Amino acid sequence: MDLNSDLGEGFGIWRLGDDDALLTIVTSANVACGFHAGDPVTMRRVSDRSGALGVRVGAQVSYRDLAGFGRRRIDVPPDELADELRYQIGALGAFGPVAYVKPHGALYNTAAVDAGHAAAVVTAAAAAGKLPVLCQPGSVLAELAAERGLRVVAEGFADRGYLPDGRLVPRSQPGALVTDVAAVTARAVRMAVDGVVEAVDGSVIPMPIESLCVHGDTSGAVDIARAVRDALAEAGVPVAAFVQDGGV
Image 1 (cartoon, rainbow, N blue to C red):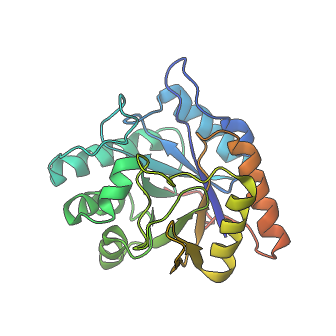
Image 2 (image 1 turned 90 degrees about the vertical axis):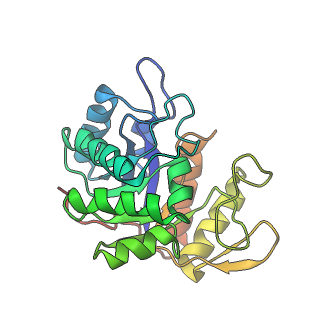
């Protein structure tokens, strides 16, 4: 099982999360590429540190939304969006190998259901060297990426709530975040071992995944990530990056 986290989400003098600590725990780092967070210095620093630790770097691409941290959908034409996503992947690639692509925030949720914006992600990933796409299982993005011949890596969120249809609970609604360490670790192990997760209504839904995400911007993220990794080990689940080489 891969363990990933969203990193490099500072900007200028502003810092968010403890990237250095999380990089000693996770196996894949989703690095912000400047459109929702991140800047050249931050991208270089996280890329260098990831390389030294053997952590795979992925481009966490977003709508152009610094003010909203990429959590607002922007109705940009798909062809223009594809260009913006290629630009972000290229920016991160200037500092080291990029192993995969993961949409961030509103783009992640939109690409799960919207064919136009999902196609933009696929186009960008394909143009950057047929990079794998880290995304929600069963989503429109997963379907289009597979049709294009890209590797689809199904992702689950140990610290996010799920709706009964498998979508994430919007952050504006109750139950969107799971912050109790015991609950997060139990959910992580259940997804990794049984391929299911409990939705906010108590129903149990399929969640077959290859990668688990622990957000780096939540309170106590380092302790949560460490607890998840320890719990996976105790459950006999090997933790390793889903991409074994550095990327392109």
